[in-house]
Image 1 (cartoon, rainbow, N blue to C red):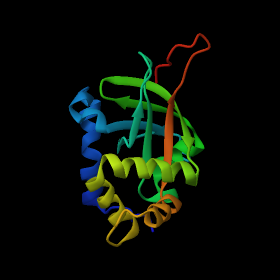
Image 2: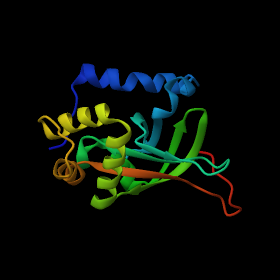
Image 3: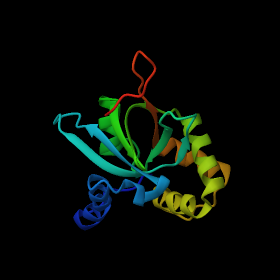
Length: 168
């Protein structure tokens, strides 16, 4: 069972880091967080949210490919917006670039969560406890349940026909 939508006070707290990014201080957030800009699926208005980077891969000087997890599963607004309109903007560290959001299937989510658990066991235990509503042991069966319930996206940098990165 994915996490419930936070109340108004907690929502405000979750949105506060976006002000840091808007002020041009994204580097302060380190490589563990990014700000995702996605167009609202119904409103058409650009929405921004700060998310934890679950995995990152960079090759050369190109912007990195980043992975994020929707802890409220398929009900997560930013996730639904990115699926409806997959051309998104990414602000990670001091990088700003356009990306394409790619939905991960259950097996890819399982692999992503298993890798995350290996690298960040305490954070994975907290995510598991919030997502499953019970103590998270980290065994493969519990990871499989999380992979069924949660959703994740891979954010691939968009390229121009010349092969250069596209600005958001």
